[in-house]
Every structure is written in structure tokens, then in C-alpha cells.
Length: 76
Image 1 (cartoon, one colour):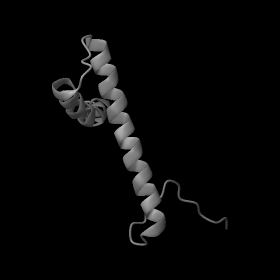
Image 2 (cartoon, rainbow, N blue to C red; image 1 turned 90 degrees about the vertical axis):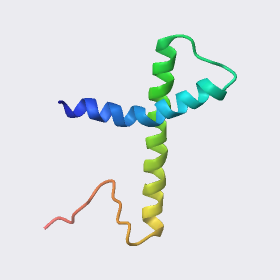
Image 3 (cartoon, rainbow, N blue to C red; image 1 turned 60 degrees about the horizontal axis):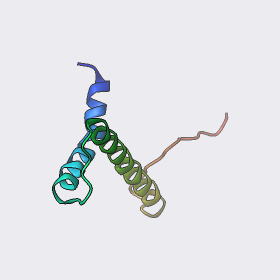
């Protein structure tokens, strides 16, 4: 199988969990399938962006974390 499929599944997992909780307990229920798909994708993607930012900020304060967005090397 293609890796793109697995990346989409990983992005959608937090959104699917959130959408199930929202559909069960939330006051506004999305009835159209496109709205459910859109909200699931947006929430899943935003959850990973927030997690990425938290780890990136934590790498400045925790020395053993060594999380780098880019790795720069000095010229020779």
C-alpha cells in the first residue's frame, strides 16, 4: 500500500475521535458527510500542528530532547 494512505489515516485518527465525541455530546451535529469529513481533517491536522509546536518549544528548555526543525552546518 501507499505511504500516503497511512499518513492520511494518522492525520484523521484524532479527528475521528473528536468527531465521535462531538456527535454524541455536542449541541450542533453536522448532518452532511462533507462537513463531517472536513471537520475531522481540520481537527486532526490542527492537533498535530499544536503537538509539533509544543515539542519544538520544549526542545529549547530540555537539553536531552534535541528536537530540530532544521539542522545547519557551518561551511568548511
